[in-house]
Length: 103
Image (tube, rainbow, N blue to C red; front, side, top):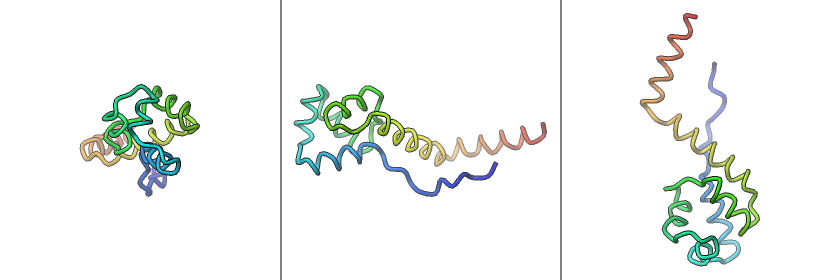
């Protein structure tokens, strides 16, 4: 199977949250407090060091009206991109494709 056109680097969903905070002039500290999560967890999400989970996506939806399913879709695309960039996984996938080509 050929590459499916994954040339653009996907955005981490934390960037969407960060942009929304800036647009609304909300501090990370205030949002973290409202969500009931630590400031460090929120900061790690915003800085792409921690993934958005289903739970945090729902919390962001409640607080910022960003659809949770949209955040999860962005996270999935980001995760897939990161996996495709993994050299060891890429080599394994190449070996698998070579093996199954004989079937």
